[in-house]
Image 1 (tube, one colour):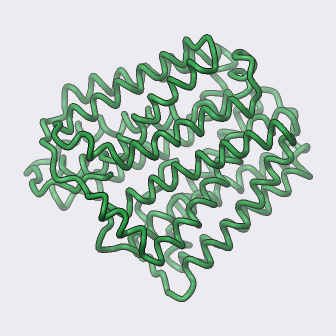
Image 2 (cartoon, helix red, strand yellow; image 1 turned 30 degrees about the vertical axis):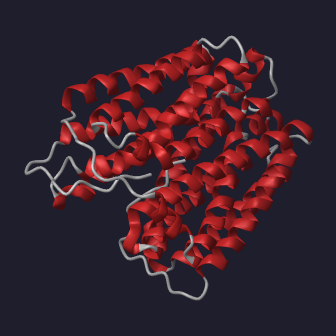
Length: 404
């Protein structure tokens, strides 16, 4: 559950503390999606299929879903400083364990630990950041934290692919654990004591979810992020098996994807300010079409690169669109609604990566992308159904971004 913000705020901003949280967030995002860019060598080294290796993404998301809902309640008597530090420790232990994994089971244990850290940290990072600065600087502080999400999203996949070719995937995880060590030490030095405030109640989350707009919207969220997980988790196997690109070109394509996604998220607010619903529907339909086109035209490296960049750009609108929508749909319970959104997002990633892996192992990568295209078509329908009958005006509401 997300915590409610403490009623007390500092007179002077603690920017160094905010930046320490930002670094911790970057490390967590990088750790969560690092397997995407090195799925093939992980599968080869641990003697499992690529579809099975993809479950390293889904298990982290599944555990993160539960962690995001219940961390605040389970740690309600513990100083938030110590809770955040413990999550950084879990990230370090997770990456070291994965780097030394002698079997797929050991790797999955490490990914479970990471899921606890990812979900728990995100459940309270916003509320904690809000306690570090005065009221009028909250938006700036949160933008710093979300900037870390964008940067990590852009760099994680191409950097992982590049480093795998030079130092091996195990050392890549060790390197990322170093980010966790720096974040841990930094937070320990600069985070002030933060006594726990009253956590959200479970009944509030249930009440929010029962609202008609929210129930319909969460179906759209599920399809959206399941479609994301199906596409992005198995993008490297697609590029290797269909486009037949070497590692150097693969890294470049993943970088193009990240940059396009970054700019898509920035530009999204211009589309969303015009029409949130039509932006979300149009971009979901576009991703369905692009995913289908990749099945038939993905053998051409130029077309594949172009389609993947377009897909990344379009997904930027979805990343920004859903948190914008939830603040408009549930303005009176934004914190609890945010918890529902994060939990649903992680559940969708679990389902998408898991189902995509099963299809990949039994049908092949074309079947996986075919499923992804169908899921995005369902997302377009679900979004239209959730948002019809009401004008969703989002002037300057699009300052956030869903973590995936």
